[in-house]
Image (cartoon, rainbow, N blue to C red; front, side, top):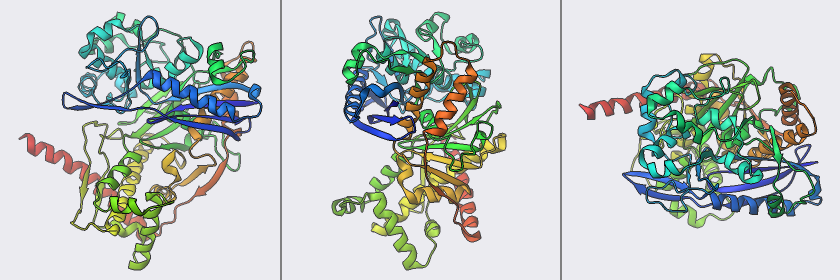
Length: 555
């Protein structure tokens, strides 16, 4: 049997087909358009829902064309970024842009236009905030929807249903408006335990009870729960036989698909649901997410969750995050005056591979441990706000120690300082989670950044933890979605299934379909451990200094 995983990321749609043992059979990727505009002093980020679905169709069709027996495909799962779509009564996407541009029908996850609405929600001090780390982020759809209500009332009135992008994909795939608990609970302040929203919270921020009708349209489902067969017209566009049943699983946010695709990874096959709380899924791409699953309800200030039922039914998930990680490294490198020169001479090596080699050369020549080359340069990496554990979307980044040196070596050291900064902040997040009651002791990593071997080693050294790297680093998120498709296909064959059966099947798929490629272990001596400890203190001091500067300028 085979299963399809479809992943809509920030700049592309990817589709992959996996065997029941997790072997990658075929894959394809298609780019999607990002529209960046300026409005009221803020940068707005839009995409086109139609463009996304068209490219998803093209990617799946190309992947399907790459397998020998298409009729072995039994299930499909979808994941996407936590972006917002609004549909009218005919199911057509509505423009969510102030200027009414018809192509701007998706508010992207990284769009912070709803900062004011998020602050309003955060200032309520409502009990709902217990599961959002104490604050609502402008990256959450509940804040974006309130922005639409306040700023585009004509659109808000015309909306038949708001949807998270992952649910929009399953809606297009099945023509049924099922809503994943993963999206509703994580980004919409929905409670899976009560099965609704807290009316006192909604009323406190300006929503009316009737507004909820635009959100609850469609039945909430678990990720991977079977929601029906692919629509015939969709099968045709995907290159599949309309007579073959292809189960569609409830959708999931992309980072959580990465968690599904990696948390079962264990070389000695000793991982179990009972011990899954010891491992953190670190999904690092444009941004990074830090997800841990636990049977207990643990509240952590500045960390989203505990979200119940968003990974496996009955389990809670906590989610830390960094809003710009891969994007930060690109940005830091682009700022340096030597980068254009370097890019002009690079051939097969990526800029990261080249700089990694350069750092080893500098370390060897200077007889200074590589990690300690950044003694005089420090970076606070929140160039796009802090998601965790400070939870301040207005926080901006800082660099201390810049000189007029425009050499290749100074670029390499600046790049190293940026990687270390991301690792130090990740340690800050993990330490905060463990201090609150989590028991994280090892990491499973995935996403584009995890291909950077030096970065992974830095994370292992700074965190002092073993890191498991899967066989399919780039495809881990798609693999997680394929696991949803596999679970949906298996449950579809059971007339009446129980929640415990879904959990068992999902975990078995997570174990069976994931393969370990390598383990990375800490390689620091006492001197380097002390060095990293000092750098951590500098990072925390930079946070304090930032707020001191703000206070001075307010006086």
